[in-house]
Length: 544
Image (cartoon, rainbow, N blue to C red):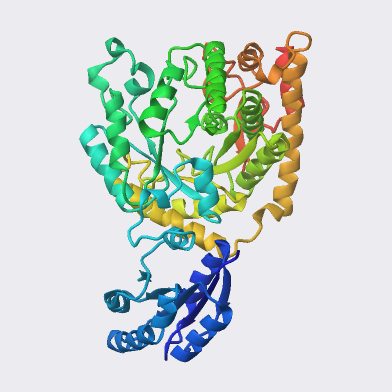
């Protein structure tokens, strides 16, 4: 049965913006709302509460604290019978008036304006304690996405070069209720050599993240997060011993989801011991492992091509291949990641078009057993070093990302170009992102409706189809499912069907393609420097 909330600005107070924000959140949480307006008398509020059979009454007062204290005392006395009968009461106002309201001991919850929308939603969705408990926050990714809607989950990487600093930072981030998912950034030896101490190099301990060396290290980091808003935790899939790591992650940090590449984190990019074809097989087996356990999987694939200056067509093709392989290997909940601002120089309009094209290709794969969740992020290589400018870039990038209506926003901190984010950096970056998200949710223009964006979506979808067909034609007669065949996928990179300029002189790739930013989009170009269609590019490959 739908619950009802009645709300008003009490007495002579005419400030109702906070009341209306509260009611908007209540509506998103499924409540029926009744707004009584500004400057409403105590009798009018209580009469309406009785008439509407309200489950909750919210009142606000934002004027003089002394006057507010007297008025709220009168209100509490007049409403005592309704409270005794089970009706609930909440207050919202300035910090000074909120302090007086809390001292009355009458209101179930007192809001002083410092709360995030998510914290208000927690209350409206059933939180009973003044201090949130772990049971107030869903502890699985999909459940938390649905619970926090319409707000996306916030995720941020965090990992400092020592365990001590990382433990303190995790605790500080959790207590600040800054984000929903702490992505542990672990050092390279932890990713590649966790189970091989003989291969570890003490000289690079802490390089790139927290130097976790035992399962108890992971347990300690997870325990440090068990307060505040009880964020989820996840970490890298590693570059060797994939299944052993996945099992340990699940046991120690309740890994929120698996992040699995398709073509990367191997000898091709110098991040791991496997060759390209072998790593594809291992990654597919890892997807299946997570799928069997109904754990979501993210393929952090397309942006690895984009960061190596690949064309937007290759980005879109790799986005499709990622989703296709996830579904083929039993993933039930697929997190599609979209990194904006990559390569640098991409325009906002063409960024949106590229992501829309990727979505247009992968959305037909969705069904009851393959759900797609959208995750957006700011480009790793796009941040300036000037922190004031970087903060602006973070805000505008996140605002742009909201065009995709993401379920998860992966916040990339504004200090990215300078140093690994501290806990304070993470908290600040999430605050910047959260405000950009709130502004967008208050009414964002539909950027996908721009004719230039729509034309580019059609173009990229058509061009990506040519590339995908080329992979199938290349495998004709040798594979029943070329898009999920490790042999065919590896050969597609080696032959240059999938290629990026930064793969030049790579043992596993052709590295022959040339690209440049043209009208805001990364495009393949001819030897003469002119934009090259996929059919022309692939024809040149065959001739060479």
